Length: 294
Image (cartoon, rainbow, N blue to C red):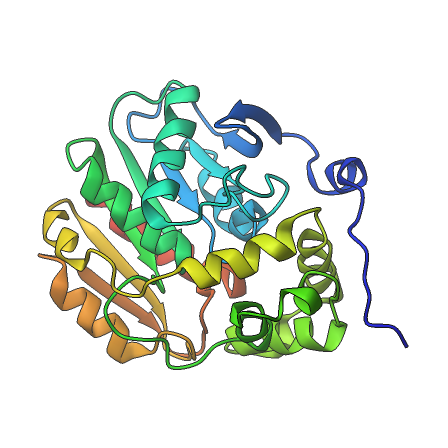
């Protein structure tokens, strides 16, 4: 059986994965997929940033629980989801920081906001908070990347994409077994991975340009870049962590917690690297408790 797997047509993916309330905006040379839900009068919109190889869909459980009372903004960041590759193939953190601020400017969010993110999205979130601390009311870091410690493990698909000289293979193939193993690696309880969830990740990976972008992102990543910026996070900061995270374990969580002044840390004993996706109701409950005290 051939390992070759062609890209899927973008218009087909948009029809399937960008129903209402999805929108697209022209920004920085890209057509950015985003959703802006909930009441516009919210004084502190909640901005949620997904992680590597994910998409805005990862936050759907949280959005459903929050949008009745809060404005919630999600988007597919460059290199992933329906937004697709950055025109300059620049996937450094400062580039992502400018992107998030560009999205907010385009949506007219000129005041304060709450920034949250998971994994790579968590790293982006704390860099945004450090870049414009006067605009960030609070930060929510969910199994966030970016501290000095190296990952304690890596999903198989990421490990292959990160290998220089392997792009001839990783940009052309998408073995189901590799995808399935990678997803099982990030869940505390792999039994929660549904066929529908697996299919979404599979199809998003086949958005034209995303497989190459994944390798470029992983090869550009420098762990612990600018960690001195964490001292600028003087706003209320909540760290949420899956205790079964095999990429960034609880030692990483504790180190990040110690580095951010006055931060809070909540852990979930049975959840993995994407606790907000694995158990939205449990994790959003902890988030609501935090938000109620702001």
